[in-house]
Every structure is written in C-alpha cells, then in structure tokens.
Image 1: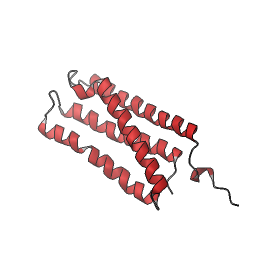
Image 2: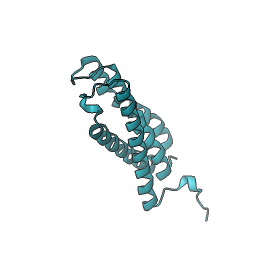
Image 3: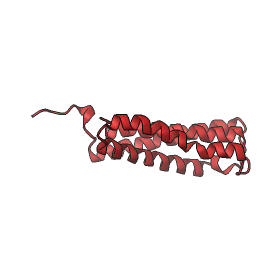
Image 4: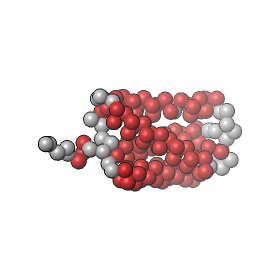
Length: 141
C-alpha cells in the first residue's frame, strides 16, 4: 500500500471550507483595496459598480464560482493540470469582456477609464484567490 503525498490529496471537508473562506476573504480584502485606491484617485462616487456592497458581492460570488470550478475540474478531469492551465486564463480574460464594453460604450453613468480599470483589476484578484485556495483544497494532477 502506497501513501499519497499531502500535495496530491484533497483537503478534508472542514479544511476545505476554511480554505474556501480564506480565499473569499482574500478576494474581498484585495478588492476593497482596489476600490479604496480608485476612490482616492478620484473615481466617481456615484459609479454604482464601485460601491462596496456591489463589488464585494461580485467578488464573493466570482471567487466561490472559481473555487467550485477548480475543485470540479481538478477532481474530474483526466489531466486537470493541463485543463486548468488553459481554462483559468481564458475565463479570466473572458470575464473582462463586459468591462471592455463598458469602457468603450459607457453604458453606466460615471464610467470613465479609472472606474473601469478598477473593476477590471478585481477580476484577476478573484481568479487568483480562487486558484490559490482551490489548489489547496484539491490540487490539480
């Protein structure tokens, strides 16, 4: 009987929940930093997507979705490392499409380059938080 190395086994349920919560907390803290810096640099205070209740909700939901996607892919894919190496960057770039459209079209009042770039920075933050926590919960193989 051979023992699996700790890096190849998944986290226990309680540990997985704690790791997931830590990943979400990290995303929330980093997104708050981005929002605070944007406000300090003069972002429109009426720009709704940069209100904390909006971006924190999206950061939490995006990070949780990323965590779930990571764990499912890592558990089910034959070559999960290869799949996730492609999937994570592609989905992160695709998540920026609405922000690019917002930058070009300005369909939300108060959306200028500063506001939209702040929103765009929050996407890789959520992705990185999900990847870091997800890889601790269920390492890719």
